[in-house]
Length: 270
Image (cartoon, rainbow, N blue to C red; front, side, top):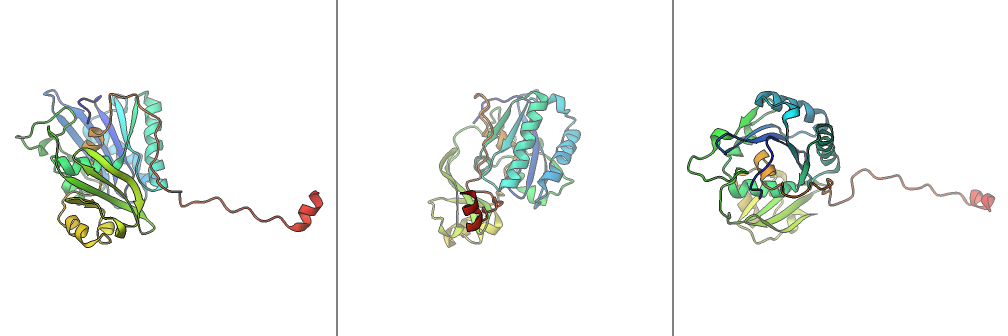
């Protein structure tokens, strides 16, 4: 987890049906504020991403030219959704001359679940016109580092599972802040990790084995990254690397198979 980060940071995640955009910045007293603008249950990421970003920047009084960095979720997720978010982040970084950091979206979801101090479990109540400022949501008794995380190593073993379509799930498991398996893709019914928490998309949760279903039913954290989580798992001390999407399988769109050449044409060529 980063001890510090350039401020303000624009965050983008299009790895799930929920479009997540956020602005995270440090305040004068050293605390961290995060404002999100999210759109739920949409596959129109391409049409909605930049209007949502502009609404977010306007609501926070932030100019594009003031952004210091971009953090984008690189999946795992569907081909089209990831391509929209990552291409937009890359384009903004190039145009503004600022670094772009790619992170595993599941890492950000797990961070959100393990720290769970931004009270963003209310995301499910948000719609495309809502902007949520999490500055006032912090517990006054929490000790925070510069990335907005509660200090100390969180405990717990967590499974993060999101919808991969084709009746499959993208999944990863975590012990504290450390990813111990995944991300990978496969049928939800076959997952058997030894965990005590399950953060899963509702469509996935109902297909998990019974024990994992029960854990998912008692979990308040949605299987969606938060702006604060995306910043927390980014490595700002490292040189930004080229963005690499975590598709984990071939895209749905495939090149047409080559048509067989007739024997007569082959004979003519010879």
